[in-house]
Length: 203
Image (cartoon, rainbow, N blue to C red; front, side):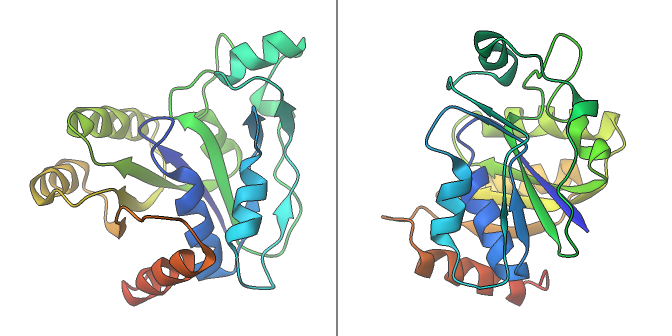
């Protein structure tokens, strides 16, 4: 089974959420498109404690921290969904997208188009800030318009019960987890949330 982690914005917490999912499920990790450095694959590798998860190389490793379509143009290459193929593995695969759902890969395709291409269920990471209800529900509309399979939503940041309630009500997505603000992100923190994910019934 493949799971595609996307967010409502660039800094939603996708990499941390991906590490937690990999730790909970002892899943493999793959980021198809990395735009800029440091590599998120290295971050996830450093945060995992289990010995089963494997980190797969990117399909595209771009040099500039920018939208993938712009970063690819700077590098003199073109991105196409049909040129990206998930790595071969018998394990569960957690796939981390670049930026939010409607970040462009080229003039016609978006990050969200990789979800069906990779035959994945979607996990949406929503960080909680003033304005996040609007951004989250706009993302939900884009997801539903494409009839994507959704595993659930992960909230990230200081708890805001009313924001979380209204987002869950209008999205209809189950809540997988809530990641609180942490002073530092360590393997112990990732293990803590992996256990919470299991306790929530999503192991």
